[in-house]
Length: 254
Ligand SMILES: Nc1ncnc2c1ncn2[C@@H]1O[C@H](COP(=O)(O)OP(=O)(O)O)[C@@H](O)[C@H]1O
Ligand SMILES: [Mg+2]
Image (cartoon, rainbow, N blue to C red; front, side):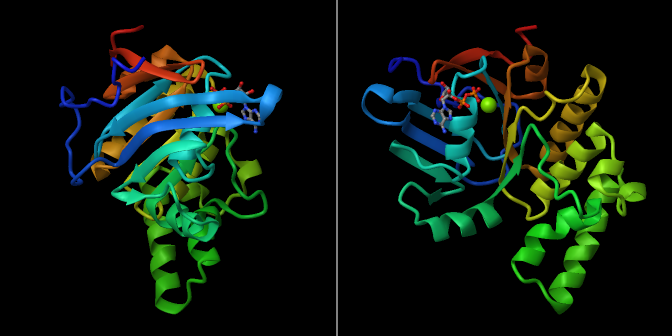
């Protein structure tokens, strides 16, 4: 695997590269769960560079290490070995406290099972991050205005006051996208964002993800096991048994 390098993005010219330097650089990342006989190598010496504004699909079967790799890229999980640099910040040696601050300001997450707070409305779910950070006064007002603006952009203004249980699956995922974009991160990580949705709604959500990333110049890694979703990406990287390999060009493999 060492001879093929999926991190080589020099041939890539799809996305407008707005940010300077890559949004994400993984270098020799390895993750081993457990020890001794029970050790499982979930990710093996993975190297990957995602340019600013670039959308990368990470495609692989169940159990191939996709969630592990995404969690490491977002500072939710520490790698056993290797370097993780997000937007120029090397998080490999970060303390838990530094990682919390990093996650709050630099990355957005959208998970498969939408993790909205069930007793908060759509608008309050967008505000949860700034509220946790202790926003008061003017900052709080600005945060509210931004939540309204984002919900409008996502076509959810009429749903702002609804609880997650009162929303459809597609609407819930749109709220989760809004929350991930709330702090204007340079990188958003999506873990199978459409797997719980039917095909048509899934495609609408992918179109929304694509246009939101493009209009902001935000980079994204979108984990999927569905080859139909790869044509929304600039580039597809495959993962099998924790090993990254070059994918087909976006749109060629379905
Ligand atoms: N917390 C964990 N402890 C032990 N093994 C794990 C843990 N999380 C994942 N694994 C194992 O690591 C491998 C990769 O898992 P994962 O990253 O969840 O794959 P994917 O998201 O592609 O389905 C699998 O063999 C899985 O069983
Ligand atoms: Mg997974």
